[in-house]
Image 1 (cartoon, rainbow, N blue to C red):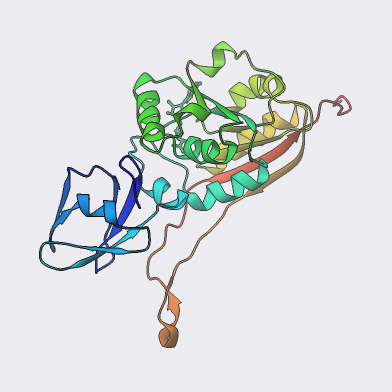
Image 2 (cartoon, helix red, strand yellow):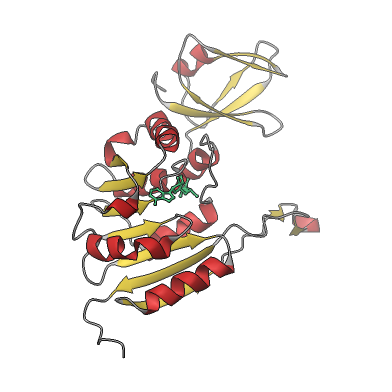
Length: 259
Ligand SMILES: C[S@@+](CC[C@H](N)C(=O)[O-])C[C@H]1O[C@@H](n2cnc3c(N)ncnc32)[C@H](O)[C@@H]1O
């Protein structure tokens, strides 16, 4: 049984995907006919419902990956391939208390909130009100708004947080907010950054070198999809060749002073 208000992914016979919040009074108009969403009441995830032309649509419970692919975006976002590694490097899990600089459209915020759960909290800073609203709508759509405290502020004005478990920074000039990172997380905590260009990575590394950071890692992740045809298995012709560089480190307040 699927209940009104639940998120549902409907998949057409040709694989086209529609993400909807279940409202039994609504219909989905497709090239294969009208899909009466009220039919979802008598359906379980994994089953099919039919359009008025008899075409079968599969009914799936959306995964976090599906939700991330469906967010409304007006900024550059962090992609699932990078988010997976970020979550592991920051050790995000139930109860995590997380700082995020640069909410943007909220792609990463959503994933952080999902894994931190109701016992954790994401403090997400964003200076542009418009993007804060987009992020808020994306969170509310999937019911994760209570796991996030959105703060409409320029990070450079300073933050009122201490002893957080980790931080992720996705702003254009992250080297200008390293003091806030150092203040905000507990000693030894993992911190991460995403930067689109190598010039930015160099500038960040130069600044981090002057601060209490150790275990610095710079990575770029590439994801190549294959055509799933068993007897002609080969990569897809096109791929997203670049999203951003990831930089990770640990806050190390016990580092000896640099000469
Ligand atoms: C690339 S977007 C972040 C995208 C986000 N990580 C996502 O996955 O959707 C960068 C955001 O940082 C915000 N930003 C940049 N500098 C900032 C600052 N100093 N204080 C607060 N927000 C800032 C921008 O307004 C922008 O929305």
